[in-house]
Each structure stands twice: as C-alpha cells, then as structure tokens.
Image 1 (cartoon, rainbow, N blue to C red):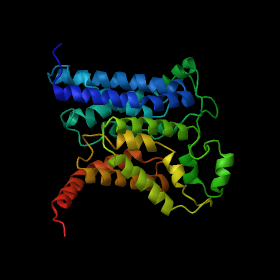
Image 2: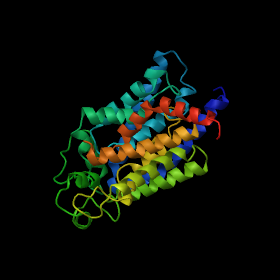
Image 3: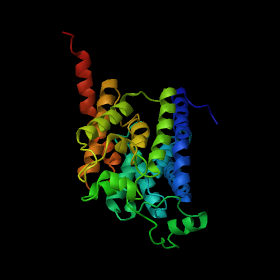
Image 4: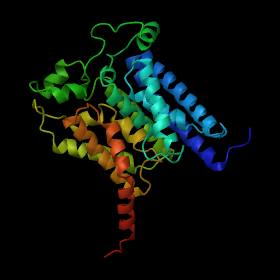
Length: 328
C-alpha cells in the first residue's frame, strides 16, 4: 500500500480524533438506551463504507486513500447518534445511504459537499418517515436479543416502550408549569431532558477535547451556544405554563452539544473565515430555538445546519467585506 499524501494523512488524523471524541457521548447513550445505539452505529457504519466503496468503484477511483480517510465513518457515526435507538434497520440503512450518495458523492466526493452529509441523511428520513423517527425509547432500553428483534421487525415494541422527549412535552404543554413538568414528567431530569442532560455533558467533554487538539476553532460552537442561550433567556418567562424553557434546559436537551461541537464544525459545508464561522454558529443557535419552540419538530439541529449551509456564501462575502473595510 502506498503512503498517504500529507493532506490525506491530516484528514485521517482529524477524523480519528473526531471519532475518539464521540466516545464519551456514545458510552452515555449506550448506558441510557442500551444495544439499540450500538446497532445503529453498526448498520450506519457498514452501509456508509459499502456505499463509499461502490461509488468509488463506479467512478473507477482507487479505494485507498478515500475509503481510509475516515470521513464516511464520521458521517455515519454522527448520523447513527442522531437517530432514535432501535429504529427499523431499513431506516438506518436508508439514512446512511442518502447521506453518502446525496450528501457527499453527488457533489464530487470529500471536500466538495455544500451540505452536512449526516444531517442531510437525517433530515430526509425525518421528512419521509416521521412516525418511525418519533419513537424515542425509554431509558435503559432492551437486551441484545430483544433489541435485534425490534430493529429487524420480529419483535413488537412493549407497551410504554417509547415516550415523548422533554422537548416534545414542553412544546405541547399548555397547563402545567415547568416546575410541575420537572417533578412529574419522566422525560425531565434535573435540569434538562432525563438522561439526555448527561449525554450532552459527555458530548461537551468530547467537544472540548477537539478544541484542545485544535481540530477546529472555537467560533462555530461558541456562536451556537451563546446564541441559543441568549434567545432562550430573552424568551424565558420563568416557570409558567407558557414557558419555552430556560437557557440551561435548552443547552442540555436534545442534540445541542452534538450539534455545537460535531455538526456546526463540519469543515467542508461550514464557513471558513472566523467571523463567518461565528455567524454560522449564531444562526444555528437561533434556528434551533425557533424550530424547537414554534416549528413542527421537537429538535432543530439538522434543519438549522442545512439552512445555514445555504447561507455560507453570503456569510463568507460579509466576512470578507468586513475584513477589507478600512478602519475609521
């Protein structure tokens, strides 16, 4: 096997660090949801690598170094972590195939995609199969045998197996105060979604590791988290029944930290200039809050990043114009 070119080797090292940084979040998800998370990861990863190899063959390109750079596996991993545990096998396979085909190779392969591949695959199956994408399992999932039967359609889900998330419950709530929701609704934990708050802390730890390793800059994550905190603080009216949740609740519910450190920082479809990255993250945070609060979906990370991907050229032009503007 010939040695990798320096650029390919740098990409592989960066992707390896990203995969390593997901481990705290993966372990937290495994603890709270069980084998369904592992099955998602295996199905998504195998599908992504198979599609990658097939497309490279059809394009008559060598499998190496493209198959070894880790980009397909990173997209598959982030997609699998965003999907509901124990979702049907065909849903995971469809999402991963769409992510690689429509999110990556349709545009020419690695380095050319205008949209985040993982979130494009997620958004497509969310729109196409909303019922299957709304079945979030209760904590501590199933055993391996039951999980396999559930994923491959041989075992009906037990009663009360799936339930509303904290974001779901808060969005549709009309009568209970937030304090009552935290006290009585099993979807709520100490300060965010039950279990999800610890998953978010785990992804935060992984994201800080990536910042320390300088895999990406601080601009997009900080922009997203500050924006989400600011808008949720401005719209927060305490514990009333019409409350949309505190900044702390929004930071540690849903896929906030996964979105801030692993989705907003995707280097190809995201902004390049520091100011553009900061605005990219800020726009994501605002859109996440708007979709969570008034949209038709409980979490808005996927749609937020895809909408901001569309705005990257404008953000880059704005950042360039600001850089060229003479000081007065």
